Image 1 (cartoon, rainbow, N blue to C red):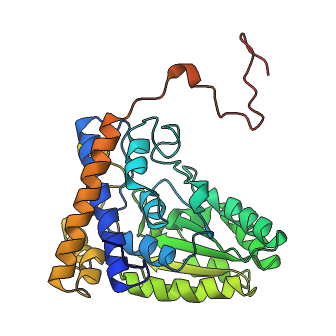
Image 2 (image 1 turned 30 degrees about the vertical axis):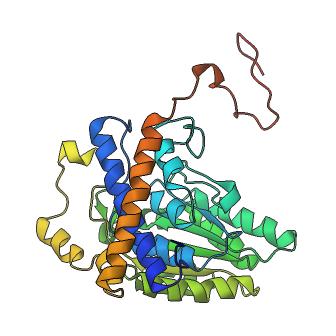
Length: 327
């Protein structure tokens, strides 16, 4: 069956459901030891990735964060190759070298996740500038969390994007916590105020509703593509799971159960599911499970990278360091 367009109700549902089940299957592989080092689950925030990426063209660009699986999948990456990447296999998106926090697929405009908080913003601005210089109407999106709004590198990117009217959409996924630190204890002023200080239009939206995110993203993408410059969108969302799967063992307490329960009452998967018939939901769910069954089998069957190739892909020229050190 041909998948529906990603910007339709059925398409949005398939994306949020795929991300949710991908993350749940990935957590199972972390627990079994097949994904080493753990992951930062995106569970609860699926509406942001789905809504924003549904407003983009294939040739548009995105950069992501340490919590980036949802963005990569929403932009169209192969779930099997993505899961193989998390498992450190040679058939992964980046031959098992990027892992959970550095997945990329340039063919799809996915310029890479980034483990450094806020560090993807200037990469996005640079990519947008390069696209405009080449005469293309490409739009670039930078995804980042509330913790990044206090990083100077993000403010520098906002400044340049405003000065040069770059076609950039800055998407802040405000899930309320920078690891365990609340926004209230970390952010002076407001999140949107960071962008407004540079003259960038900024809005705060419901980041739990895929359709709401899509509508805001469409407006921002249109503005960027027509030369009007950047937009900043703060998506109020919530992660239902741990900051990192390490918490499943450590069981640290910084949120009470009632807070999480209240947040789960507005599950983005359930919100979008309500817009489909039960029959359409069941069909989509079954198809997604089949895709992920194949993805798990693909990842498990794939070989690990050959240690003899460990120094490949480190240098743009292809040069390898000489034995004993030196360039």
